[in-house]
Amino acid sequence: MNPYIFATLLFGLGLGTTLTFASSHWLLAWMGLEINTLAIIPLMAQHHHPRAVEATTKYFLAQATAAATLLFASTTNAWLTGQWDIQQMTHPLPTTMIVIALALKIGLAPMHSWLPEVLQGLDLTTGLILSTWQKLAPFTLLLQIQTTNPVPLIIIGLLSTLVGGWGGLNQTQLRKILAYSSIAHLGWMVLVLQFSPLLSLLTLLTYFTMTFSTFLVFKVNKATTVNTLAISWTKTPVLTALAPLVLLSLGGLPPLTGFMPKWLILQELTKQDLPALATLAALSALLSLYFYLRLSYAMTLTMSPNNLIGITPWRFYSPQFTLPLAVSTAAATLLLPLAPAAVALLIT
Image 1: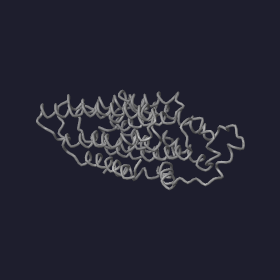
Image 2: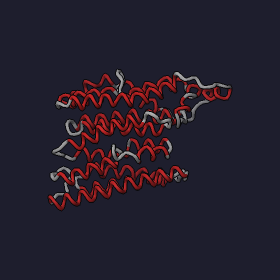
Image 3: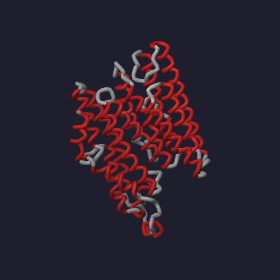
Image 4: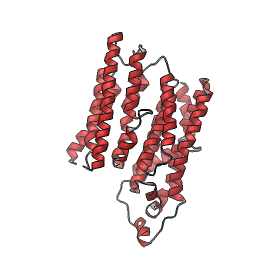
């Protein structure tokens, strides 16, 4: 792709998200989401592979449906209440419609079925943008909506954690596993959204750090299936030793970074007198943990047939820029001691 066009599209991505961040009017927020979608579509289809084109088409249809629903809901809200302001959502009908539209935008269950299919058709770099940056704008709108009834969000959140866990169990494609991981993590964020928005934001940032690191690990190893991970020790032995820590951090095991948001969310749900919900969420995390353990097992405990051709690649210097990988891997594994500072911020 031409560097000027590439730079313009990246600028469009940034502009769309920033517009949505800065808007207090539903029309401006909708416009930001549309700019965002239109900017990423050429990036998704840039390789002209049939699967990439198919994934782009599916993504466009899902996003267009969500955007149309969002526009219809905000117009209905203006008709019923005379308000276009994002933080003045008082009527339950348009509020519920907007929550459903935004859930479709970011791929929450039961509107999740497009996400694994789309992610599977993309390369790892575009998949990383889709799993992180593209979640920011819709999630910001979800944070701003003040709903009087938390039940729809709790149902969507719990369904997402369960679907994200169940869906990833029998997958062999890494990108589909990461898509289900994304659905499960977003479910955790939505569960606690109404009770502690700041905690949801902390969970989102932690998820971004861990996902960024995971995608970069797979990118360095050029891995797209579980079987390819088995030969990664011949290419990058040190990274192969560190990658399971990042994966287990995604699973939420102590003493890694990923344990902090899950622990704080379970604590918050218990404080809100929802012990059954906290128990279900904790049990659904075990489902996700299973497939992270599967990946860790494939990377570190599986010895692939190693002929001479398989052993040589690690001797060559990798031309890839590894500083972002080093920083994100350190952040994805070592930030748990900052939990007291996070709690202090949440309390204030």
